[in-house]
Length: 599
Image (cartoon, rainbow, N blue to C red; front, side):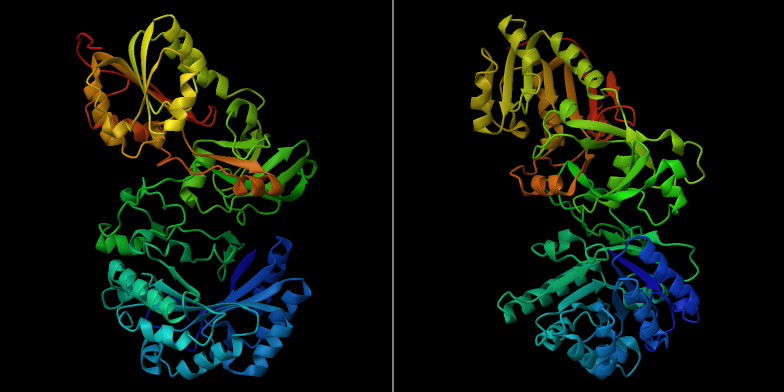
């Protein structure tokens, strides 16, 4: 895991889009940088990466690299590369465990590159690439895409073709520093950037018979179909923390400069997608972003990292400083007097989704099963909650927090209410998405007694066949909920743990309203996403298993209720998910009016 250390903001280039345009006069002193290297080692990082400004301008560069190596750390640089045009410097840095370089090249010719960096820099930068390629480095060359080089990306590809071990990355210019000050002159429409980047990557892959290494950043995935897996940011480079000049301690790397508009809420690929830069959305709006439909995960793993301390000496999270630990992605768990640390590296969920799942909804569990995917939550999962030791702590609302096991069964009470409602059903019942029949033990006796006339609809034929033996006397049909046309009306409609499997809930609600008689009821029950604490080998087995994604969204009761509200319905009963409940929510509706049943 990498720690990014800013050493100062002075630079020998003068990029038009420079992030640190207004603080180029600020430099950190050597002692501050050395203390940060030591702190990174103490936090358990395996590499420190120095950045600026331009770090290679600093006379302490080799001393800092030597200090890092002496503490057992690999070394990395974010650089314009000009000083690395000198082979002797590259050799010295390699001897001091240089393993990672992220270098800027903004044009494939001197004319374009020098125009953007406002310096005669191209020859030195290109020579640096020649010096670094073939050295076994984790090496990325980054091109920031602006209005000035938007039409000149193919020449960058041509310039990089000889360097087959090097990733060429295209990054949307960020409205920060110079990018903000010169917004209109520098920042093109993101859809135009996406089109040109796609063209450049496809051109490069064609020239290399598909073997080229290409990446992108700052561009919504919906605008780069086919290249989603080439996304590249600090997290894909395994940066865990970073620190600016003057900051008291490291902070987690996050995506707070980017936003995902409402179109992203039901998007299947939103987890790793950067969305839009916040400043861009404020100026240009969000209409360029579109929803990509498909399936996504409904859970993510927190994987054990290490035992970090004992409560005998006080809270180890607060004692070691809470700021380096990601509020959402890290979990500290009390196990007796010991405290263990877990971390979620998933990109199936955004940082905000993970933080909401952990803190606002309180849906983090220990997976005590050995299954690929837990299917009996009450037996397979043990809930965690925030420790009482956190209450009143001055860092409570900024800290990753300390968690402890909940001894009580949180699933039983929530499920009991569903079972009570199903046990009281009478008349004609429509069950949408019935394939797994999680409540067959309640429904089967009601069918056998003649209390209900049950009609189940399920899109998978194999599941329908398997269900016939579990629900004798039921009418079972292969079909999709969005296309219901049964020619009958029902007293009750059930959507039991299948709401988040629906491709188009809006269409399904319309269909239900057509099939449920006036005065009838609709019951919707489902689960929100949740985090699972697992050992590394347990997580590896689960990820290598056969379980696939089936959810189209991870709606909570509020999001589902909003769909019904658009049809003028308010629930007569609503149970939301919270820190004291399981991850299951419930909505019950009663349609206005009265009428007779046509069965």
